[in-house]
Image (tube, rainbow, N blue to C red):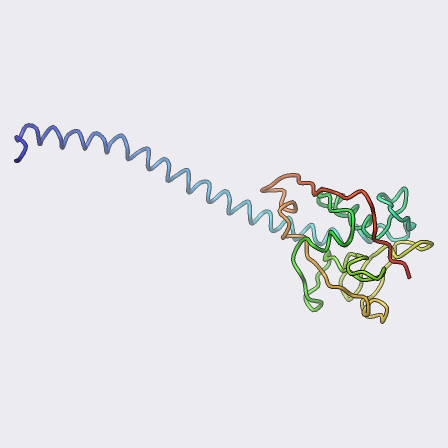
Length: 204
């Protein structure tokens, strides 16, 4: 049964009025989505640039600590630094991120990196205490890295080319650009849960 002409005209007018109300709302929603997408894309680009800059700054900051005395469990240049304390301090100063306290826990973060792909700011790990990932340093480039070696020594530059480090090399990890906590433009300040007992001497 067809609706009377007057009723059909009423229905058409009603639908048209609904479209007038709904269409601007939908358009506004689509504009908001596009705006959010554009903002997110810009934030990601800015974050990537920040991560790259931070990675380069990590190596520079590590170089500034050369000559600081080694101290087992040390967390600051004033009191002395052990290997993971050195890495942790540098990351805190450069990125505001607090890494786990031990080299072994640090080795679980970031992305694995092949030796041929190492870049300044990457972390290099070694077995110096008869268990894997017991020592860590910050790669500088040209097969060199900064680390806090052991008692009686100071923060120094070492080379991956030496037989000692080649035999003990456990791999490398890239933190910058991988950890969400290294993208302050998106996430803001983030703190990884630290462990209280240090266990990362490079005894030899």
